[in-house]
Length: 162
Image 1 (cartoon, helix red, strand yellow):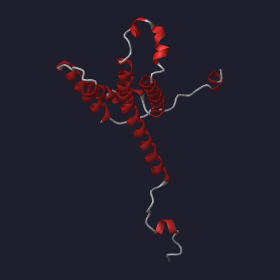
Image 2 (cartoon, helix red, strand yellow):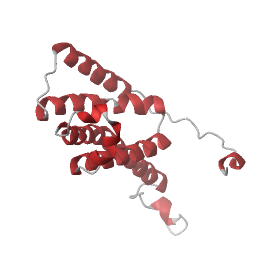
Image 3 (cartoon, rainbow, N blue to C red):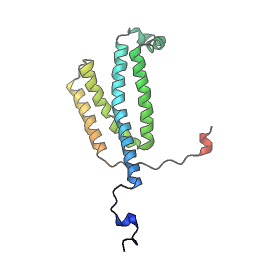
């Protein structure tokens, strides 16, 4: 009688279906992009700040100095990290709603405040910390909501080719 029952029905399913593997991969990719976007921005800002802090204040007066400043290794690294951050953010926005991504990535403001305080020895007032904690609380609230991604917008291929 067991020969009449197909093998996949008679044996317990050990491996999850392909759909759940795909969902897990998408979740991992989304989580990795989110972590990259959240952490890369504050650290790139920290490195960029270190780079420009030892440069003359004439930079704020004479914008033509910006090109020379870009040759500074810390500034170049900070700018490169900002570019990678932008690309990761674009990828994240392609798979998640803007109304979810922006509040969650605002966690980077909290990290930036901490980095500024710890590494740059910036003075952070109590009201500044309160505002930072409000941002953090808001990101927790948004992060606890459901993640519903809107369907892709219909695009007109004729308009995209120009």
